Structures are given as C-alpha cells and as structure tokens.
Image (cartoon, rainbow, N blue to C red; front, side, top):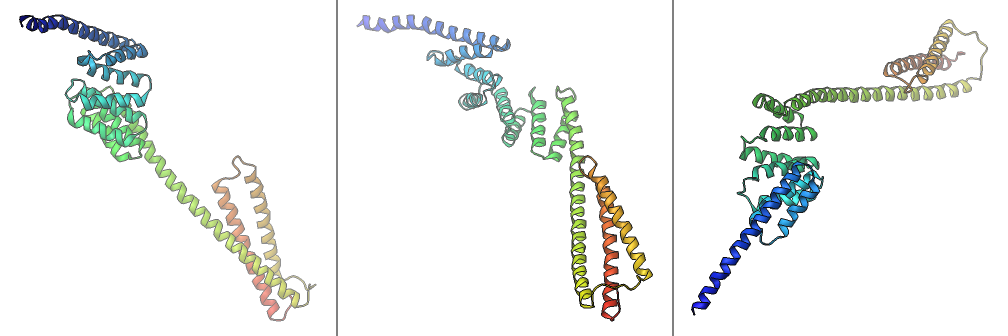
Length: 307
C-alpha cells in the first residue's frame, strides 16, 4: 500500500521539473520572437510564436504568442490573420496587460483596410477606456482622419483642433496641422464645385433659351417663305432703308459670330466661358434682328404690299 502512495509522489517529482523546463523553453521562444520582431525579422518571429501556440504545455505563454503573432501579421501586411489573432486575444485574454495596445492595433487594422466606421468605433472605445494611454493622441488623430475620409469635415476638423489643444507634445501634431490645412482647402474646393455647378446649370439654361429662340426663328422664316410664295414670288421693288439697315446689322453680327466661333475652336479645350457667353449674346442679338425683319416683312405682305 505504501508503494502505491509513493508512486504519485515520484511522478510529481519528475513531472514538475519537466513542466518547468517546457515553460522555460516557451518563455525563451517568446523572448527570441520579440527580439526578432524588433529587428524587423517578422517571418522568423512569427515562426517562433507559432511553435509556442502548437505546444500544449505552453499554456502560460499562449497570450503573448497570440498577441505578438497579430503584430507580426500586421507588419507583414496580412490584415485578415492580424485581425483574427487580435480578436482572439481580446476575447480570450481580456485582463492581459497588453489589451489596451491590442485594441489600438485592432482599430488600426480597420483603418488601414478602409473600414472607417468600424475604426472610429474601436478608436472611440479605446479612448473611452484608456484616455491616459500613450497612444491616446494617435487614436484621436486616426479617428479624425477616418472622419475626413468619410467626408465628415466639420467633425474631423473639431477632433484635429482638440488634438492640437490637448496634446501639444504629440507626435501627430505636425500631421494634424497639415490635415487642418487640407480641410480648409477641401472647404474651398467644395464651394468652387458648387459655384461651377451653378455656372454650368446657368450656361445650360442660356443655351436652351437660345435654341428655343433659334427654333422660333426657323419657324417664322418658314411662315414668311410660304406667305411670300402666296404673294407672287420675288420682287424687284427697291429695298427700304429700314430693311437695308437691318440687313447690314445682321450681316455684321453673323461675321462677328463666325470670327468668334473660329477663335474659340482654335483654343486649348475648345472654348472658354467668356467666349461662349459673348457668342451666345451675339447670336441672340442676330435672332432678335431677324425676328424684327421677318415680322416687318410679314406685315407688309399682309397689307398687300411688296416686301
């Protein structure tokens, strides 16, 4: 009976040193992996962390192995595996000392992959839980930058100004100042785009009005031609002074229209807004003169006279 009692004790005597040795070996691999990470040898570091994770006796070293694996994946640009590693770490080891850093890095993954809304939520959670963390100013900067990327300029500007006032020694200070300048230019760009849109719409309105009047002129000309044909054809009656003056003005306007059209066609881009405006104005004036001329001719025909 005494032999059976002694046997478990002997087993423990042998197992404890073995377990301690296995744990020491895992800790050594974690230390080597961290050193390799510091030397930017991320693939080699990841291999050591993977060995720890594959070792069933290294339970005490698993949290560090999972956390540093996530950082290695981030450094290697492997966002999906980095996300999985850090999510696992945050879920399974919520009381680990590296949780604040892991939450910040998890938010950075969302930002770098363009998931700005998610990154804003994660950075906000980080700032709420760890407002005095050394990464707090950086989290504020990336939150503001995510808002900028989403086009929420006023919110972004407010956070960048908060960073400048509350973290005057932040490493993100210069970058925040640059972003504020970009926001000011973005405001101006939006104003110019609005003005350009309005100008374009106004130009379309003017063109449509001109086309409408041009169509009316063509219709009036067709009516006049029909009336003239019904009045007996062409005439040899001397042209009245008012008609001569109108003809001369219309000819002069048409010459100017042709000259301006050729000039605009020769410019880079085909035309400019000032040239278009002048051209439309000249054409409109020509149409008015032609309409007056046609109306005068039509009235003459209706009275039984010769045009």
